[in-house]
Image (cartoon, rainbow, N blue to C red):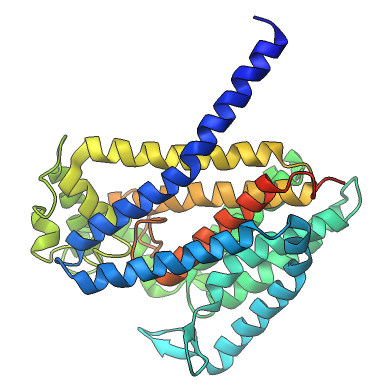
Length: 369
């Protein structure tokens, strides 16, 4: 087979995946609506509310997709600064809900600034690396780490460890993709391992330590901290190969599952559609994430490559952590399943990220340097 034939096949495959990118996103959103109806006990109001969230998020995605990447890059610094200001405002004036100060009341709307930082931090770090020297020096990585740690520490104070970890991971992806030397990476791993006892004793709240202990042995507090994990595991296991059928899951319909519309919606899906449904759902996620990675590999500038890579890998992390959490192999940290779980803020944030990826893909000539 000649080189031109190989190139034609490759371009055909890329176009084929392109056709499935938006299709994959919309199929996941449709799946979310179907499962949400069951998880919410047949509540039409909940489904309509989520549908409105999706429409708003799609408008945001379409708007961002039509903004050239260099314009998005110019917005990185002001959006990051705005996010930090809002986090400080939350610390000073934020509303306390369920023992955490995470929301800011602006009068006409309640906002959770930490969601904005999920996009603002990777943008800011990619902007910084793009402006740095062609050959990055160790001080460039130090500055990037400080850019990352400032919002992470502010979010930990709320406290919101789950969101803080996700932002930390998304920022780490940027640093790693920028070319972090392996010796520094190994040093960070060693430092993290050494600091674990300090984090356990002084950096974590009692309920966070309890979550980890519960993950290791949920039965030690079956009616308390371990209840979430036990009921979720029962739901997933009882789904079997083909599931019990839509609206027929006993764990969800009889209100045994905690937060079935948000964090634990994957348990509802698993009970009703079983292993076959889970396989199809994972295939949809792989199609979407795979296309995102293709866009990353074709990005022509450092900024575009770092942003696209961070968004793609963070999406994978969201899926992995949520499914691991409800399956009992990871601690319960309150992370929604992308495009499936109920929630307007998370839906807008995720589709905003897709909008940035589409901008990079549809404006290749504009971002070349």
